[in-house]
Image (cartoon, rainbow, N blue to C red; front, side, top):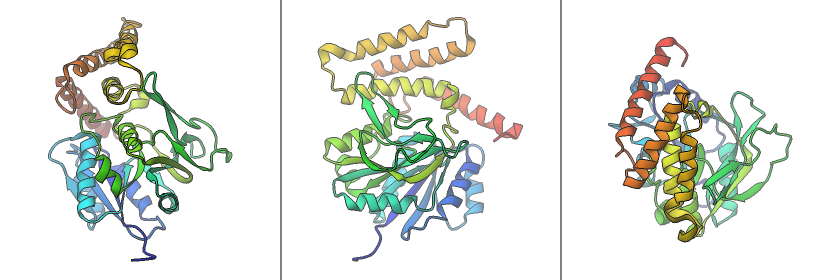
Length: 328
C-alpha cells in the first residue's frame, strides 16, 4: 500500500555470545522505524545461548540450527525464512553490534531513493572508542583481493557524511533488497566464514546493483568478538587465507597468464609461513594457513575440511574456558 514502510526482517546470527545478542536486540527495540521484525538464528551454540535468548525475549522468533553452519549458511537460513514471509528487505546484522535509533530509517531512505541500489550499509564505529570510525565503505584491491576500510581508525569529525558508491560493504551490517536475493542469490556457503559478504557484493554489482554506504547511518561494533580475529586467531588465519584464494578464483580481473591458479599469491603466503619458525603461536597460525592453501587446492570448502572441524572444537573450548573464568 502507498505510504507504508517496506517490510524489513533483521537477522541476528548468534554463536556462543548470548550477552552480545541480548544487548544488540535491546538496541534494535529503540529503532524509530515502523515495520521491522527481528529474527535470531542460533548456530548450535554450546553455552546455553538459545535458552537465555528465549527467556529474555519470549516473543522473539528464534531458529536453532542443529549444527554450526557458519556465517554464510547460518544467515541463509534466516534469509530464506524472511523471504518466505514477504520481506522487502533483509538486514543482516552481527550480534556484537549496537545500532543508532535512526540507522534503519537512514538506510531505507537511501535505498528507496536509488532504484539501482542493491546492498546498503551504515558507517560503523568502534564500540570501545565510540567516536572512532571502523568502516565508512571499502573498495577492492584486485591484485590481492583485499579491501581496506575507508576511515579506519579516524576520529569522526564529519569527514565522511555522504552517501557513496563502494565496491563492497561488510557483513557486520548489510541491508539487502529482496530482488538481489532473487536475482543474485544468497551467501555462498563455500566460504563458511569471511569473504562471503564481499562475494555477495561483487556478484550483485555484476548483476547491475549498486553497493552503497550511507555514512549518516550509525552503528557500533565490538570487532571480532566471535572469532577474536583482531588478536590473530587460528580460525581467522585459516578462513581468511582459504577464502581470499576462493574469492580471487571466482572474481579476479587479473588474467590467467598473470595469476594462473593464484600461484603468485600462494608464494607470498608460503614465504609468510617461515618468517618466525620458533614462535609457538606464530607456528599455529602458519599451520592454519598451510591447511587453508591445501584445502583450497583440494576443493575443500564449506565444512569439508578436517582442519575446520578441529579448529572449531578448539574455539568451542575457548568459549567455555572464557565463560568459566567469568570474562565473557
